[in-house]
Length: 296
Image (cartoon, rainbow, N blue to C red; front, side, top):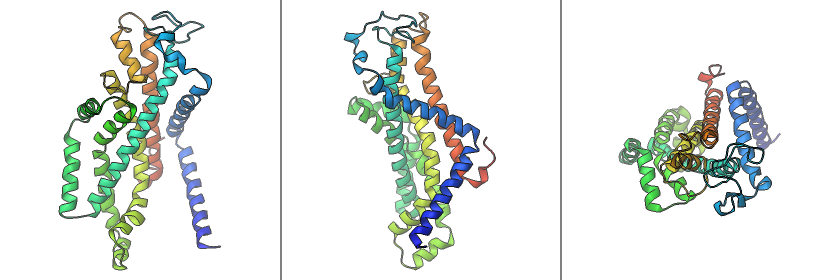
């Protein structure tokens, strides 16, 4: 068997071991099932519904109407279907959550590996920048960026991603220091390996499982941040779960007894954030040998 074939066989065996270990974690399976349902609903929404129903000028229902056969989750202040808004809002909330978490993890991983690899003035400067972002109130900074850059989903992604990477950078830096203390790193340097080779070929593969596990937890925080920004009036301008909560607050849905306008988006946010948290904890338990058998 060739070297490439051996490597492929080992990767398949490692993937099989990972799947078996993850399948043994019940909480992780529950979280994955919830996420699969949410993502599936977001993907099929354009196929089974019409976006024209989101236009307030084309609303056919009565304002703040309770659930009925025509509107299973009632209507909002404009007569739009809350169920339809919930489905289309899932696309915005999940997309912003995924993309902002991805941006945050890329920035945090680059800063963390660089700060752990380069010692001396370079590492010190990188860590001072990280500490500066760490002590700043990320939500306030995200609101300022969103206000300065204007509305739009890309603006919210940038605002959340740029303000939430600092804790990831410190975590990756600590893991980088542990990896570079291993003997094979010294042997690689003695054989002439440069900085780029060490960081990409040795450090990055070793910190990748930690990045993967932390990403799922970061997505949960990003969804909450997007919902908070939308509730505070600094959203993307599109219908999202946070924007629905803002609308229900503005029109006094809670005080007027219109629970169908408040509970569905709130429960969706809680369910998705809980699902990402369960998946993240399960990944930590699977990828970290010290935690195996702890989370169930």
